[in-house]
Amino acid sequence: MSIGTYAGIPVKIHWSFSLTLVLIGFIAYSNQLTIPETLSLSLFLFCLFFCVVLHEYGHALMARRYGVPTYDIVLSPVGGVARLQRMPRQPIQEFNIAIAGPLVNVAIAIILAIILCFTPKESFLPSSLEVDILSSPAEFLSVVLLLNVILFLFNLIPAFPMDGGRILRAILAVKLDYLKATQWAARISKILCIGFVFYGIREEMTTLPFIGVFIFWMASQEEKMVREQYEREEQNKIAVHQGSE
Image (tube, rainbow, N blue to C red; front, side, top):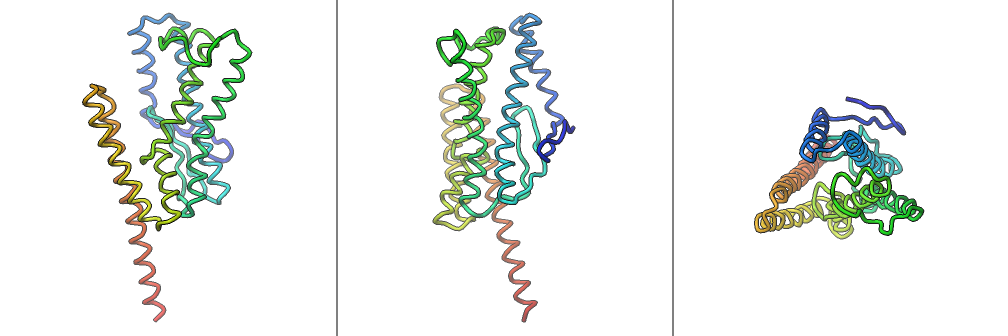
């Protein structure tokens, strides 16, 4: 479902996004939240996804500078994705596109920190992790600030499909060709994923192994996609060469 076009880029919501409403209801019921607290939680999730949209616009607008169009930005319960028409092969261009999203989160965090400087709050960090603190405007901003810092750090993990994986590939591509850079970045991604799985099992963190498996699969898909692109390009070169003889 489309929710509008901004800066020439359509923003869409995946059907699974409706599960967010279920999540709000579950949290409100489990924590016996009042109506104001439930509304504060809903507003918080709206702000979180708004920050995600801005993050994706960072990628999309930087890509536009290099002549790469963006099909759309799609929101789902697990985040968002800017669907670029292609990823530039030039390392500096891919690096700038990849880093632009996390830098948006840094900018948001800085703006919120400046605002919090003018409140009676003594710390930029939330006083607790309880849902009911969202009813306090200063605590609300603190939680949004913290989550933008987390988004920044999480996206810099050097593994596909996070921005850090693409940043790693861009750095490797300075010395290696694009395919080899992708293969090495994918291998590093998989090693990290195995670490996530074992650490999650040892520490009984049930979500971490699932995240590790998902990232492992995405790294494999990225490597497969780039390899198939190279194979098609080689076949086209052979066809053109044979046609010119």
